[in-house]
Image (cartoon, rainbow, N blue to C red; front, side):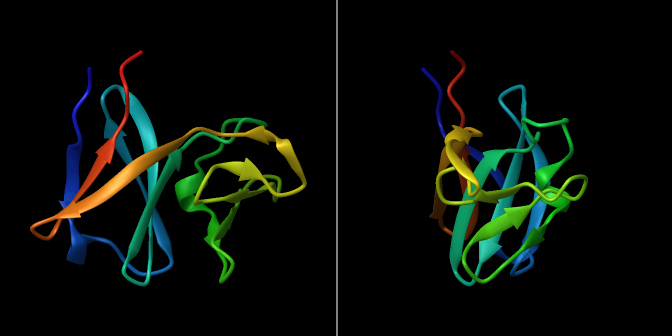
Length: 105
């Protein structure tokens, strides 16, 4: 069973930007939107681009920097076809630290 892993302090994350961070053997894209944090698999399922490098919009979507596939950062669904998705992870803030839960199964 996995535990939440600290990925940084709240102030380490810029509003409206993503960061690719290794968590439990996976690259995870962590996003800050206002005071909310989200985490999805960093690799775009289309061609493997880093989603953390994509543009985050006001509707909490991230656009892949290579081919403009757009994903919801809340649940990882592809906005053009909700049957396709990338994995989303639980995020919490504890004592000013951002923590992500990535199961190891």
